[in-house]
Image 1 (spheres, helix red, strand yellow):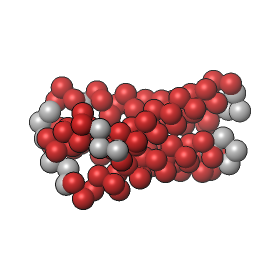
Image 2: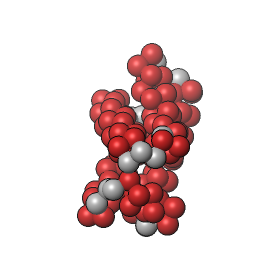
Image 3: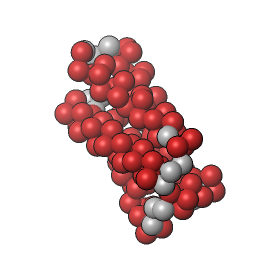
Length: 115
């Protein structure tokens, strides 16, 4: 395990954890966007919990690599779905937002694979 892998994984977990808390605590800038994208309010706790579980999984993956891979793949799928939701809602200028959170997750997966 390289230092770069650990640093990128910690960054990814922190970013995803922050994103999860923004959904779970109903940060106005997040819930407004979710409503604009047509995401049902009943899904919000599940989406926040999925991101929180992914963040924890990335951290656990530093000790148990298979858990980190599963969490990373799950988060990549999550953020792919987020991009699809944004495109479906025709908010093209918002496409970069889920990609910003997905990028360090992908980086952690790649660095974990080459380590």
